[in-house]
Length: 273
Image 1: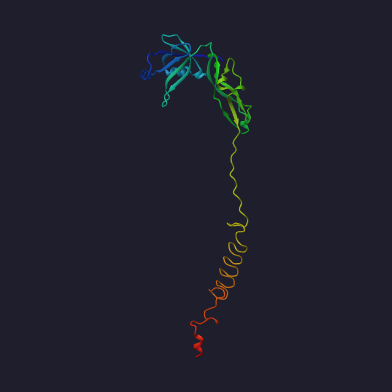
Image 2: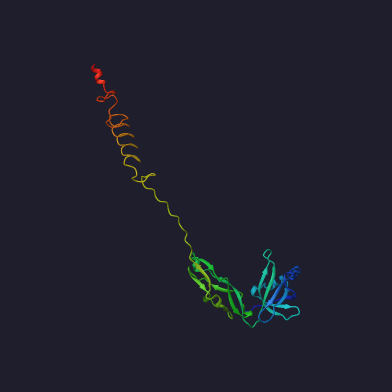
């Protein structure tokens, strides 16, 4: 695809370094350098940054072929290779140009544009563009504006690679660098995790384990709530005491009961007298 050539005026600068660069910027110019394999020494120039922006305001953008007209020197055919900008205000601080020949191949990065809506996206898949640019080899006048890739046929979990697309006429992909690079892929949608439902309560048990309490009394002994069988909280047969005597042990004779020896061993003798 042939492209137009922009023209950019430049002037030679004799000195390099921070001091001369600051003085150039104070005049509204920026330092630039033009290098390539056709000249032994790079050419240091100064350019108008606004004129540079206009020169690359073409469909090819950074890949625009520029005719650099330097005062006192032969015009040079260049590509806008790189630049440095101020991190605060974004103004251009420095520019690099690559000298080229219109009859010799160059390597440039061309943007990739996806065409169509994949079938997998319609089915719920997620489209991911992996490669935004592709390196191509061609003559400067045949640099394409973009590489269009049709992805409308892609289904879920399918991808398209550089080997699946056809390069424009006069252009070939630099595959020894990117090999069989992935252009785009339709990913499988992630499933949302559902929180487990709370466990159902045991029928008839309110806060207690089934079988922990004895039959007939929740949490107590059989027959009475919280006591031994037959009496509330006491031994069998008497309320709160041993059989036969309240408050005493089983079989213990009551105080003063018959058969209990009197205090003092000679009580009978005194009665007889």
